[in-house]
Length: 540
Image 1 (spheres, rainbow, N blue to C red):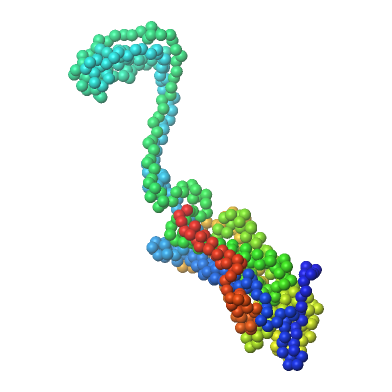
Image 2 (image 1 turned 135 degrees about the vertical axis):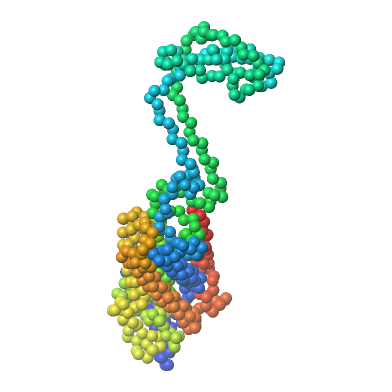
């Protein structure tokens, strides 16, 4: 503590009446004048941490069962043969999808017919020489012309057989084959053969039509296969848009089935709950690190410790079970830093309490209305104050309670809960770090179970260890949550019945009313859980 509380006067003396040995006050606090702190122990702040954590325990239980059931070969085959039942069971879908054959009609964006491969370029093709000819005036259509062609005498001389274009003799060793057809024999103009006589053939000298131009040669361009019509919007929404190549590069494919979207929704809930709670616990820790440690009572200090433990249990479960914890590495690191800050606050408080060797009773007796937890918390962190409290007579200790030794750290349930969360977090961090360093993702891809494997046969030892660790972590976090919740409500109920709380104009216990910005913002912040669940319940 040092000189952090200089300027604050802390009265740590317990006063008794000399005549009848009855209790007068705890320091400066008399009966009915104990100062409330609704931002710490108010019902709004307590419910904002207790209720979402209970929901998180239930969601984490469903996620854990989904992860375990998806790794048992017998259950996996049982659900795969019953798609309707599997839609009701949240599935993490860690088994890669089967490869898609591009020639089959299994993907909306792939053509059902293989495209025609372009012909290989021939090494013996004959280049066609094209001359740039000057423009020549075209005759106007005749009076009987209805389609813009006119009679046969007005046709261009290039349409008859003799005036067709032939390549020069130097470009080919064989005789040129006519590539045009007379108009009278053209299949698309059958009526011309019966109505117009054949014009006499005339030879035209191309050298007289104009100066020679440069000769250009062109390679024949093959025709490509027609493009497939894109799928409709309804089909695209119903089926995955990823290609087989993209699925092969990922451990986990897109999750668009009903069971997979439900699993994503559960993971989103499990991630958003500790996000809001660990920030709230960090705010309590920072408030204590300021000046609250000099004015906060030991009662409110205990409430702060229990609320912080509850927030840590939910984060510990999310860190252990959520596969997408490292989807955003920056967000994952920030979460870990906030969690480390809360653990550091708890560790500092426990070190200060163990420095003196004594602490107040963790569970005040219902048979009396007085307890040393009404003293300031700083009174229990200095040895000279502890010495004064230890000098109380036995009759006085029966009235206010007595201090408990902290020489054995495993006897104190608060410290024991802190050690359980710390050990689980360290082991989980080692497991997640191993997965990240080896696979750079949420874990290795799993192959479908073999047909001959039994219900439990074929499960590797690593999977057995993971499943056992998930069950053990959930059981430990559930124990810490139940213990901390019972102590919070017992302390609040005991203080309400002891008549030490200072009333106001609205109620006898201001901490039982949801008033003030601190309690309201704590409750409103839980709405982020619903928003995260709604955002995850959509096709990806």
